[in-house]
Amino acid sequence: MNTSNQSTLRHLLIQAIAAVLTLTFLLVVGSDALRSLLIAGLICLVALYMVVFLHELGHYLAGMRVGYRFAIFSVGPVYVQSQDGKMVTGLHPFQWPPSEILGFTVFFVEDFADFRLRMLLYVAGGPLATALTVALAGFLYAVGNQFPNFGLYYTQPITWALGIFTFGLMMASVSLLVGSLYPANWVPTDGNKLFRLLRSEASAERLKAQIMVAQANLHGIRPRDWNRDWITAMTALDEPSVDTVQAYMQAYRWGLDSGDEHLAESFLTIAVKHRQQAAPNERVTVLLEAAFFEMRYHANPQHAIEWLSKLENQQNRARATIVMRMACARDLTRRQYDKARQRAYQAIDMLDSANAFDGRSIMERDLFRDMIKLCDLADEMQSKRAN
Image (cartoon, rainbow, N blue to C red; front, top):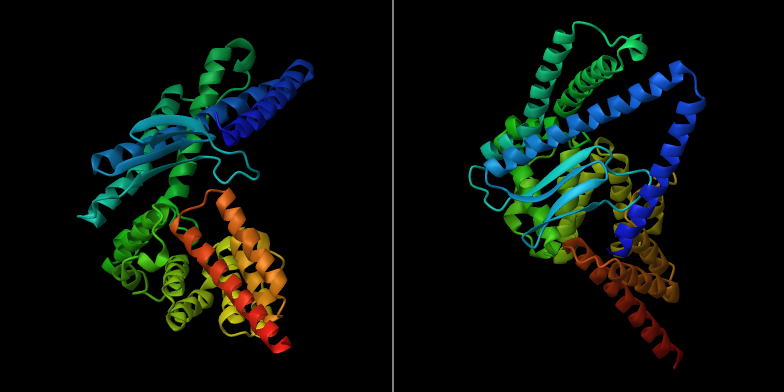
């Protein structure tokens, strides 16, 4: 077991022991009412994760049916992952707050023929499974013909527990169905994806291109090597939505890594224009990139400060390397070359230590190396003047 999994297991064991001790204490010393509420809460929690499991199972079965390649199935802290042709189980690295407390399923799309129809079936698999769970829970609830009766806790505990479980199953499944189908603007719900697929051909093609870019990035293909047709599809729409922000940020990285600063800036400008539609961490990333671009390519710290002033001390929401790259560019504009060089080497070491070799991380290393070269060149020019 690697260090990350050991740390995760250790944290989970500590939390589990603390939870068990707390619950045991409350069950022993608490009143009957409190004891019944605690047990009811635990039963509802089990019902919730059963609903999540069935939802993700729906995605899994649909993904297998349309011919996508399975990657990972996760419910709570536990996951099953396909690795080198084998199924591997494990626990997600511990972090607080947790990035995913319910579940998710990931498939790789290798065959993009009939993309729109096949992706519709895959995405709809989860909500369809949840809808069936709602029907099952409703049937069981109707058969029971009564709201869970807490009085049965004393006389018929099994019947009471089944009533609580059925009620929890129904409430959880209805909530998850509504939540997953709601086409939220800045949360990647199933409803959001279904809306994009059904809305128009251009919207579906953008989603297709973004999936291609995401998979290329995971396989270590840096932005400048992405297919230009993907960029064209991602930037075909200019509308106030989180999809536009994400698409144009991907196009910005492609332009930046390709050495086309003018094109990169045009893509970044549109992402900045629509940034309020994105999630908070995405907005922070957009503003940091705008500040970086002003300092690195325009040597205009005043404009950069204007962008940074809109962050409201939320820089920690962005990737650490983006924050360090912006700070490195700021040091360059201030002619603090030693400081900029030190930051750049620190960032590269951080990426190496994290074993980060996705496409974006490869690009990040070169951006820092370019700034190191600028520092060396500036020092060399200063040395020549001194002599």
